[in-house]
Image (cartoon, rainbow, N blue to C red; front, side, top):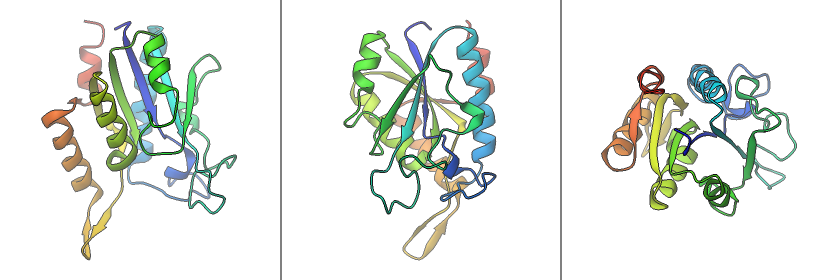
Length: 188
């Protein structure tokens, strides 16, 4: 596991309906962050690699994650420790125009455990890029959150979005597991 990193993508205040003033709440973010917190504690306990990804929107009229805003801060449930790496990004893909690849290479990481939000956007873009770079990837499905989407006048429920993306991830990009299943094999 020493060549594995936990990648926490965009678990920021604006996504939490429980956060007063949340600008873009998702469905189930609090539940996902509870699982993310469990995973984070396990990685900390084992002194494994942890990388927090924080989206910052440079547009002053951004609908959410404005630079310097409270809504753009990483949620307290998964707040980084001082010694943990935090990488800021401006695009859905956590590798695009960031130092993520260099950090992973420096730490000799070959496997990623990816959690966070939004499943259908930044988690998706980051996972696909990671796979293209050759990383072995695991997605923890119940530590990710998304929201209802609309297409062609039809509402696609957050659960349908989540299931569709997890099915696609599992088909060609990652091992998809629950928090409990991942932790069963964590130290084996």
